[in-house]
Image 1 (cartoon, helix red, strand yellow):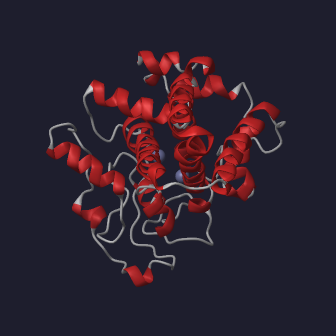
Image 2 (cartoon, protein in one colour):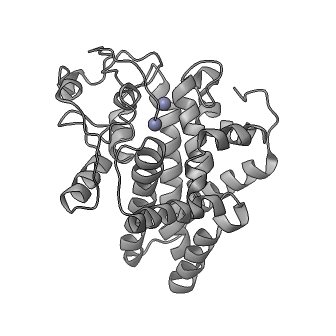
Image 3 (cartoon, helix red, strand yellow):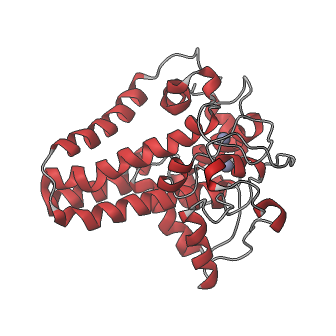
Length: 295
Ligand SMILES: [Zn+2]
Ligand SMILES: [Zn+2]
């Protein structure tokens, strides 16, 4: 949709710069003491994006306490996952227009565009449209505050400074920017690779090109089972079969057991029914068709 819009150099430099910090981190000496912090940042950044921004805030697949929402929202800001209003508005629009000329990040415009370049070419005017699609998110005080980029970057800068003072420059790169490099590219791969017919399999005959991709599913805490998600967007589970490992689903299940999540939209037995075996997972398999809905 934005393919012919001009490149926003500043956004490009920021997105590439953050990833370069991750790559530079990989070239620095690794110390075992970084590992626990790295894993915490990777998991917190990942789950804040998948559980909070996507399954809760965009699709309202469940409810949880306000303090927990704030923790996850802060987690997403620490890894600069994208301000919640824009994230939700953009993603709801994607569900409405998936793989049409109006989709904001379809690989029909090429892999680089669907992966990252749509963010770089998105015109300022589109922001107003996303705000309308995320009007409910704008009611949340901290999401409203974070529409201001200068305020949004504060949690990230705070954590980066703390890591620099604790572990030095190499430690900061390994603990923060290496996990972010993975988080970014796995999240973006859901938009690019999980809409490309060459990769993954289909369990549902949705009107878009969405695919379930096992590797992105596992690394992306379940988000790679994207065809399942397009079939039933509000469902809190994206991995439906026992072998579709969906880390986010298990966290929501655990929260529910602890009384910290409720009104969870779990799959109906109909959608969870397994008609494809792991060995068939590489092939395009159409099982059933359901109408697309948007939160
Ligand atoms: Zn999609
Ligand atoms: Zn979605």
